[in-house]
Amino acid sequence: MHLPFKTSPLFQRKKDIHSLPESEQIRLAKLDHRYFGVLYEKYFDPIYRFIFKRLGGDEAVAGDLAQQTFLKAMANLGKYEDRGLAFSSWLYRIAQNEVNLFFRGEKKTRFVELGERQLAGVIEEAELSANMSQEDQEKLVACINALEPEQTDLIELRFFQALSFKEIADIYNITEANAKMRIYRLLEKINKHWNQIV
Amino acid sequence: MRKFKINKNPKEKEPSAEQVKRYKDFASLSHQYERVTKRSGKRLYQDPKLFILLFLLGLIAFLIFLES
Image 1 (cartoon, each protein chain N blue to C red):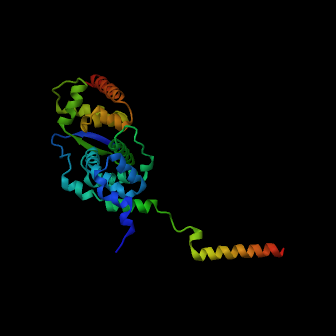
Image 2: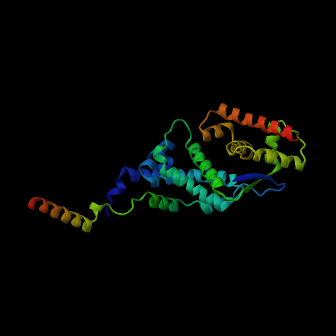
Image 3: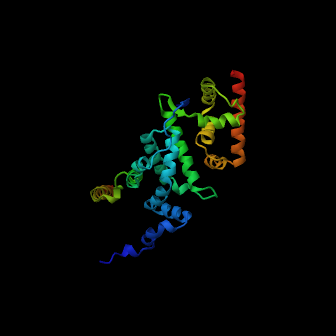
């Protein structure tokens, strides 16, 4: 049986869409949301992992927020413009907003566990005493918790999620130098606060 | 609201491949997208019954206008 749509360029493209450059995949996804599947396949894993870690390991909520992230990305894909910023950064930004909205909406305080290894970066970069007791570490965590939520996010992304300055800059749509400056100012603030309480 | 707390033996923070796979479902996302973006109901002029009703109302109004 002859199926005319099978010869359409859109159908032909569906077969080899995986081999197309990302900009072309995005263009096709803007035309028809079903083509978004290729981008979803490519980025679901890193986005899910990012959200999972930010939530401190809550897999079900991470799954919901990851789907929500992609739903918003699909709905707003028309607004996405390639201005030299990676598509993944745009997705991370949506995911970051989704997680923040989730935390803001929580009535109870949600505790995210940190290991000593994750704190080590803050201790080193803020030039704090290397040999910290358990009590000192708790004080340091209290210092971090006392920061504004946006500031805590920066510390978290850099030291607990181990993102590079470039990745952080892309998420916030700022320059790498600006991201570096913001984080080092925060470390200075933590250092000052630390010296006041110890 | 979110707060950090220190734990000597924190849970593994990397999800397993199984966990990731469990939540990866483009079919459901696509379905959700269609539901969210679908227009609610048909437009008036696309419904034959409503179209006839509107047409008759228009006709009556036109006849009344001619009579007066």
